[in-house]
Amino acid sequence: MHNKTIAELAQGLKSKEFSSVELTQNYLDRINASDLNAFITITDEAAIKQAQAADEKIAKGNAGLLTGIPYAHKDIFCTNGIKTSAGSKMLDNFIAPYDATVTHKFNQADLVMLGKTNMDEFAMGSSNENSFYGAVKNPWNKNKSPGGSSGGSAAAVADRLVPFATGTDTGGSIRQPSSLCGITGLKPTYGCISRYGMIAYASSLDQAGPITQTAKDAALVLNVMAGFDEKDSTSAQRDVEDYTQSLNNSIKGLTIGLPKEFFSEGLDDGVASATMAAVKEFEALGVSVKEISLPNSKYAIPTYYIVAPCECSSNLSRMDGVRFGHRCTDPTDLEDLYLRSRTEGFGEEVKRRIMIGTYALSAGYYDAYYFKAQKTRHLISNDFKEAFKKVDVIMGPVSPTTAFDLGSFKDPVSMYLADIYTLSANLAGLPGMSIPAGFSQKLPVGLQMIGDYWSESKLLNIAHQFQQQTDWHSQTP
Image 1 (cartoon, rainbow, N blue to C red):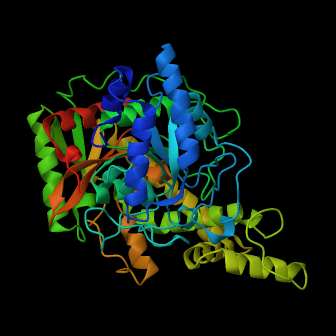
Image 2 (cartoon, rainbow, N blue to C red; image 1 turned 30 degrees about the vertical axis):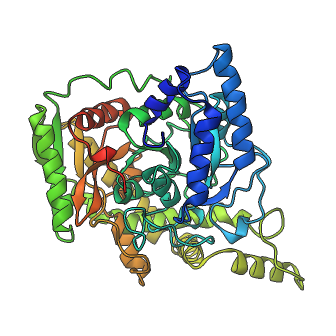
């Protein structure tokens, strides 16, 4: 049962092959027996109640397409009455008093939440080692990282502990763990999915998306997640299309762009080989290939690590030990309360980024750092605009390497370099995907696809056609 896709599970529920309660219990048993540390909270009782309600709807014949399908939520989405920690000691005692818009939409669609997945603290990290709750293990090799910050979600889907999970992508945090765990991850265009109730890291970069087995599953979930939300000023006022409609369209005649900057020094030979083999597969489907250049992509890392920390410095200032979150014991005065609560509540990486951001925004440095980073961000965006005049989709590796050993990055800067191929899409606000494209030394390799604004349907179509010809997406640890 657990190896079925969402589409197959939905058909099984509809035909009464199994019930939502049976399906839910099967996944809960797998989660409770797992040693990956993929979950922070498991909502056993609530999940069974949701499954029972779903079965009643199915029995009455008024069920929706995804009624009764279980899922896991990255622990950055607020869930009414359930702990929402963002992987931090700061919010270890925070019980959200409302639902995020994505949570609300899932409830409206009668989906069944199994629990909240582990993540890098406040989504800051690329290895899931920055979590207050400990590192998540990669199911392909438990000594390896699953990637981050959505590492818990990616590991859970890869090990078939859930049919799908939510993730958030600020600089690659859906695509990179999806690549390292051998599953499908989609970061939509900025503004496609509401950020209301999603604990903010960097507000101009954060974007929610689905982590699934297949592109078809991603389309089904995106149909539920996407849409304008008046509670979120950054969500786009656009009609929600049916992302499954164009999955079976021919991709013959499309043009793939391969940025030369994505295939330079630092790319692992095995990853490069698997990436190019996937491109050859597309050529066999009638797609042409063209080399392109994204000349300003080399500035993506320094640009991102100014913009994102500046925004995190601002967003996390509300967590001061007064209104909610961790509070130190017996503060002597207000300054001591702030100082010790934040010192105790935040982990090392979060403190590092807050300090970088506060420095870059301070008087005398704003123009030298933040303002200049925003100018460079504009140049990076312009590179993509020029590229999409010549090509339909940009392809390349997601990560320079396959999954790396837990604890292998002692230097934070070397960890930042792991995001070299993913950051540009976030800075430009473009949609991006990672799809399973092969293996190198028995570890999964993901192929990255970046599309023009609002081209999610095209990306899903291209990914689906690839997955009709290959079976990388059905490989399990």
